[in-house]
Image 1 (cartoon, rainbow, N blue to C red):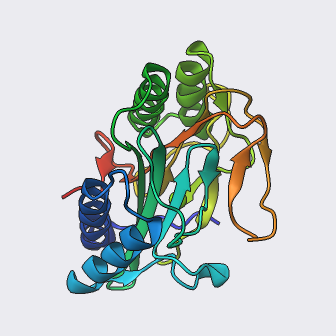
Image 2: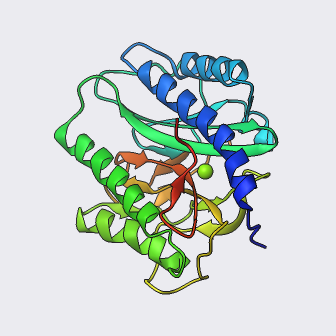
Length: 250
Ligand code: MG
């Protein structure tokens, strides 16, 4: 069941979104060769608490991090660890969310570690562009398929693979609400989008095949099947009568 939010509820969600966005930005600023993903995680947790929030992922399904830190061929749900030390040329997806006043915010971005290859930069650029196209499609009168189609059109035109097994989601007083928001689909198909729907839109795009492998023994980390790089960008948005409203914004 899709839970429609009132304008007052959407207003309240802005604070969870603001904290989530600030933590993502500030944590991203620490990305450099030599830093461990555990250091990034500790920083993010402290900042969320200083901002009056609680980490949304910590303890979720037993997850032990404040951030998901997914490096290179890891698509999503990488676990922060002291022995995962970033190296020049890596890319890292940082996904983080905060709970404030009972509302969830959720956002992600993929960052370059030092100098990265042109191909890696293009993957980051195309993935972010596909997210913005999907957000632009989140308008009343459009359908869920229009969001996925927007991602797929851009990513596949660039020769990249769109992950199928993991998708965006509704969000509110729970981190994962209906509907699922796939990053692939057909224009005009799926449920009709309405004002008051709040969605986490999050393309996961692989430089090679769309196929995934894992999670394995750590129960979380998902990898590209062919070892190619993967990028991930996410924002929490509200559908309004007018343009979509990005809630994970400062
Ligand atoms: Mg999400």
